[in-house]
View 1 (cartoon, rainbow, N blue to C red):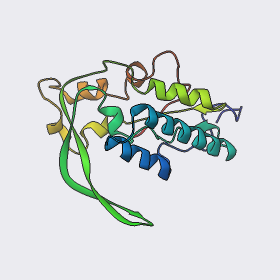
View 2: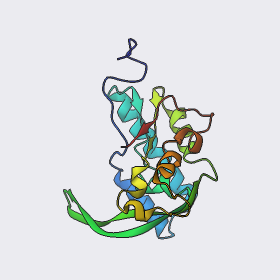
View 3: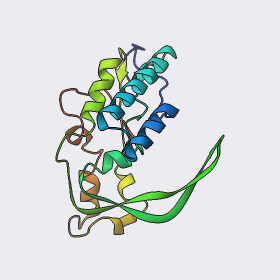
Length: 195
């Protein structure tokens, strides 16, 4: 444990997704239907992120997330920004129980079709915005390498690109997350990886 309770790592923490506000869900649906411009969606996201940052700060949390409000799915949006990553069907479904009833959806799987490459920074602007709107430690959730192949196993990873699965695991996010995702500016003091 750190001797300074205001420096990471913190005694208690939270990870990732928070419930999206109804207004943001509606804006995202309007965007998908072509009824809302990208700039208008970004404005709604900015407003929702500011509100969820205030909520976390008011609760006394020391590390702050954007609630992943700019993501449709916590892992897919991140992983699909790498070259040679494709989605596939699993045939497996998951059920989510809500006050409105049960939602059932097919789970996403990924296929690695070649060497994974980062062709541009990923979520750097999201992180920079978060850092600008909080006085606490900003953080971002990055999916682990297992998310890329855990529903498809070895068959989901191209054997020509990665004849040795250990090579894939050593070069896939977040093993090299700092190199792949967050450039030196704005640098994350801490980042949270799922396992």
